[in-house]
Image (tube, rainbow, N blue to C red; front, side):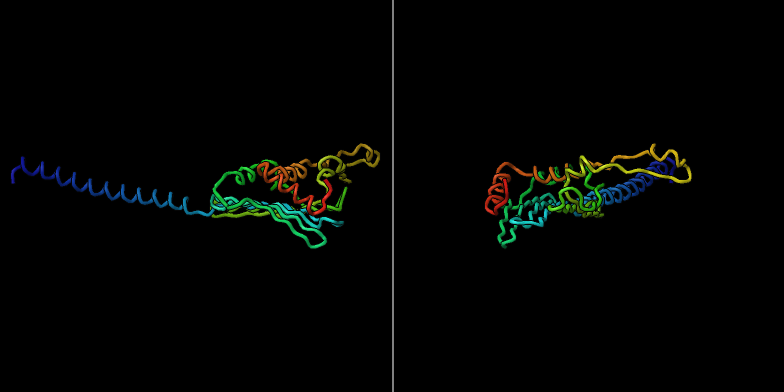
Length: 217
């Protein structure tokens, strides 16, 4: 076989082989990329938020705000129950795709809902607040439940906490102890976030339900 024939043939074979290798590499890379995209699309996404207020004295026994966003489909509701056994529930007409609950959940996170901790009864201890949040994303989940009373008390007049280290503190300096404020505005802000959620119609219906249940204005 002549040199003039062998060289072009070798180049042709090399080009064909490289083309096959390149195609297989591209095919593998593209399938991997598509698989990653599909994995992101298929991963579950859900947000849940609930606030319950329980009263020791009537006529209202309990109020509850309940919001959720599952795969972009949001639902929200409010319910009020009386000691006499009466219950009134309010919700949007049908679940639908919207961003209200996801934005609301983002607001809760921004206002520090994940940092709240249980508090012993203080201030006006009759209404007891229970806040529950749960988030499911990136195939991971987290949730938190906290209870407390009188969010205004915790936000403004919770007092101060003193630190004493007897190894370093001179007994004569006990009147000069360092302290840190226990007041935490996040409790009141989270409660206000729940109360402020929803369109005007939702608030109007809640107000009417509270009147029917005998709640004070």
